Image (cartoon, rainbow, N blue to C red):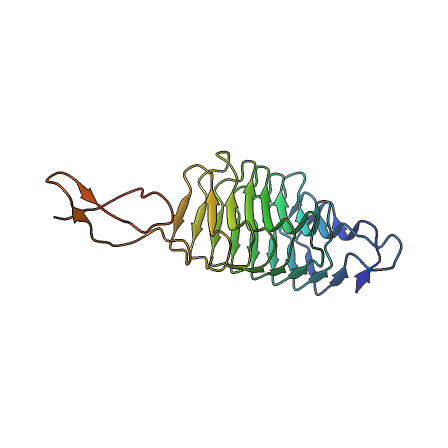
Length: 239
């Protein structure tokens, strides 16, 4: 058990083929002076590192993170089967932060509860990563893509009770991300998408495929109520 630290519970700035496993990390300990750790596990420019089976409790505010990989282009990092929770009701806190040119990383089978900014944050040239089979509950955003987060694959996640949206693609600088087969029911919004060329399909709670009948109002006009969550990209008609 790691508790009572001032910055990060575990820090690796350079490393290759390292496994971080089975730790219980408490980042914010009530009534302990200086026990307001900002990050549970912090990774710099590492390669082939595995972070699995850790519990990180008490993430607070001011941009803190349960697990953070950033700085110097970390790649091929696996973050799986971890639990990250927060007990605060305001401020900013991230569950898993993947940023600063991180690539080819896998974020899978984690449980993230009540993170007060985003449970999974893909940020700043964070490309070609896979986010799959995570369970997310609470907080404003479930998965948030920001600032040139491109070509990421987000699939099979179960996201509930997010007050902004389950998945947020922030701007046109986020391109070519695939969002599919996620369960997005029970959120204020399922997906908000300001990105470019995103492929969004087969998600529960965000209809992107449908089959309907239309009414032929004139010889050349038909009205089709498509029932989709966004404007239709393609329409196939038979008469």
